Length: 405
Image 1: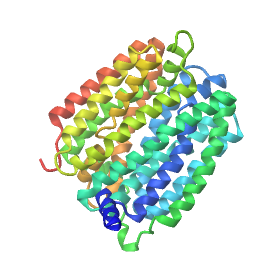
Image 2 (image 1 turned 90 degrees about the horizontal axis):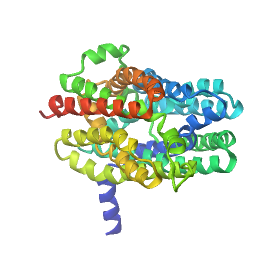
Image 3 (image 1 turned 30 degrees about the vertical axis):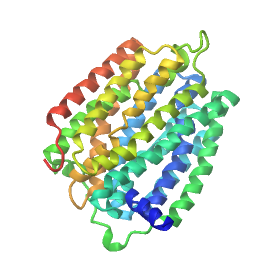
Image 4 (image 1 turned 180 degrees about the vertical axis):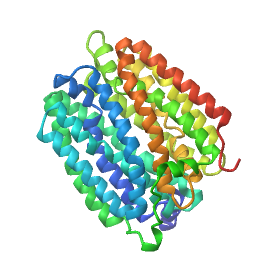
């Protein structure tokens, strides 16, 4: 009876050996990355950089996410998921090591070309792996499991990183966090090589070489989703780099003390825990019916966060704001699954990468504009982000379509 119940749970979740390997890798590499990456704005200011550099680094993150997305999908189609993910992990380790070795602004910028690449360059390959190993009626569940597991390090990483910073200071604490990231990424390499099955030669399609050719093949439903997604990401990225500075410097907590790094880590943990509670129930519902309502709800939550943040001036109101921020993940796996549904047949990973290439190239401009909007004032930054989110939500509510429509 126990074995039967376990088998039913495994089948319900769509767990496969290769998927377990990908999930373990997402937890380990993500944990190391989020221990330090979320505090890079504080690290840069501690190194003596201007307030402009956190926005520049965030814009670079978006731009690299754009430029790496299609090559990541192309390499996954060309090499197969197992070999491609091995390569991507090695790039991240090299970036972590550079920041540990050289505590300078220049090392962060150069290293970011490597460690910021991991999520962007590995995501298309992971989505392609899910599309290959799971039947269509389990793909939202597979994407949701991946998103859920990624949120574990997003929740715990900033808490641990915050403790490191409060204990050793922003410079030494961040460097120690990157050392931990290297160790966990090496463990992830071993796990990935053991669990993820190598692709058979017949399973690897002829990779598409031109992302713009793939974009032209996008159906109208995918193009409309892309327009809405760009506007929603403007809403997210305009204030993104400055949220930690707002909470730790502009906001006072219990009377006069700023929110500490540990408290900010707790806020991020609350955000991710909220997201994780959403994933599996929403996946189960979305696999049974229309995806559009879940995506609309997600876009509404994206839109409301910067507006809520503007009016939060102490720790406990911030807790409520970060619960709202967690709810923006409500339909994110559903959105990714819809992209995979609508991407050109035979080039799912590359099509996913082409989508992110175009989206994040444009959104990088929004992230960079966030630096200048912040100089004009936090209220200007947050209200501009809210306006972009409202426009994206209304566009998808009007033009968005499900695959079945």
